[in-house]
Amino acid sequence: MIALFVFLAFGSCFYSGHYVFAQSDQTASKLQAANTAVEQAFNAVLDAEKVGANVTGLIAQLNVAAGDLAQAENSYRTGDFNAAGTQTDSVLQIAQEVTISAQDAQQAAPVSGQNAFWFIIVFTVIGAIVFVLVLFLVWRRVKQRYIKSLFAAKPEVVDR
Amino acid sequence: MKIGGYKLIFVVVGLIGVLLIATPALSIIIPIPKGQQFSEVYLLGPQHTMENYPFNITVGQNNSLYVGVTNQLGSSAYYVLYVKLKNQTDLYPNPAAGTPSAVPPLYEYRFFIQNGGNWASLLNFSVSSATFSENKSLVNVLTINNVAFTVNKPAAWDSDSTMFSYQLLFELWIYNAQTNTVQYNNRYVSLQLNLTQTV
Image 1 (spheres, rainbow over the protein chains, first blue to last red):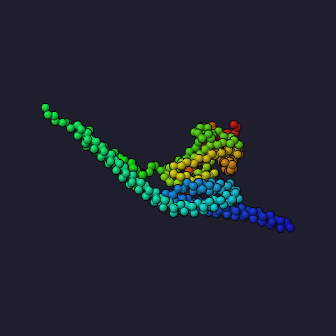
Image 2: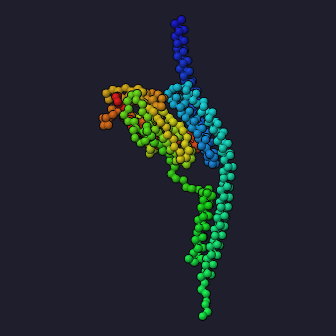
Image 3: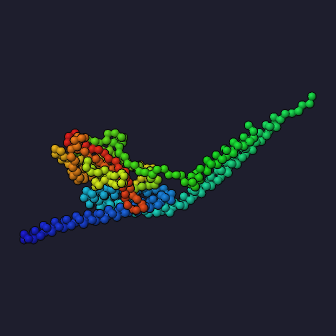
């Protein structure tokens, strides 16, 4: 009876210790996965930003995920593996959403960027032509007035 | 003025005007040189000003300050800010070697900042448990933003400055997209603390 009790007591200690280690490992794996997911999402956002996409909204979303991830890391550091695991779940979901949105933005950005580029080029060419034309017309007017004033100032010969 | 003078004025005005109109297109074609690229980390007092920084702290007393980071890297960046507690024997980060302090991090912030942007957060901290002997103090538990960390950090009595000296160290780390790793950014700031037994 005593032997059985001792066996159960030691067994329960061993099981409890084993459970804590298993939980710690599981949470560490989840944290690693969350870190990787956030980094991949950020890589996608950086790629979108490079081609000229507006990433303000995506960065705001990533900040929510980063805040949760930091909380999870802090909880893990204090040994609160349950909280760390729960906080990690939302990180993965947000990171995946951001990655998809960033990839969409990256694909859409070259089209809108190209449109903006051509708009600026056309605006510049038309603007420059109109400006030079107006300036030329003003120049002609000034020239005519100048010549007119020259003729008006021409000395006349008076017979006496 | 002769007609040649007027002509010169019109030509100059025309050239300047065309250049002004073409500025948006030129800014696309000719890349504007980038300025110096850097990140900065700073601390401000509880009123968001450069005063009233916590210095004399006692056990159980709540202290607060603002910590902020600015991104001037030319693109968005992913930062990790580690908060560490060091005593006078722990080493600071080495700016020449670009290595962080060997003290393990307690609390951490993670955040993203767009180019030219800024991030700031209020940090509340308190020494939740500490013991004192004649020439030695020991911080058992440090609470940062309601998260309690067991630190067991000792400090010997500093007879020169007559205090138990601790420093709250803030290290800035940054995600490197080329290597897919978070690296120490060689930027840190610290807050000197004097742990006292009574207010």
